[in-house]
Image 1 (cartoon, rainbow, N blue to C red):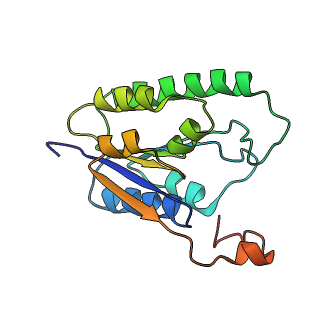
Image 2 (cartoon, rainbow, N blue to C red; image 1 turned 90 degrees about the vertical axis):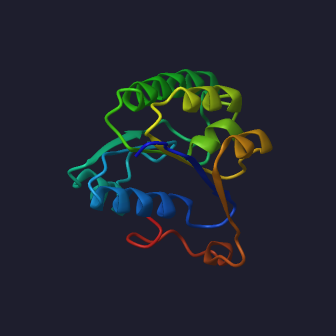
Length: 175
């Protein structure tokens, strides 16, 4: 790939991670090398997509199991910020190795929303990537500056969701 683009999957609707996984599977199926990094996911829970991605030859899967304030209410935000900085450093070290044609940073947008990183810092890191590396960022609430830095922005919109009626996430469907 001569020029990798920057894609963002954002919004309050379901499907951001699912779309990113689909893009990773497509890239892998076409022989591209993929780096798939997940931030702020429950480290104790192995999702279906995690199992699948770990089993794919052309995919390096990195799960940073920092506890998210979404799952854990009593969290030390300063310690979390330090951990996220270390995890991003590892992520961009991998990206800048030049081994990957696609890098997915799942929930990277949410890191900005939680004030764990500044969007300008993420944009700077993205702009330093190898020219042939496509980047996909996911997470709710992408800001205007981040959206302007992207080549493609898809906003998932929630119209109706069974969680509002009390249905819990189902294994194999939502995770």
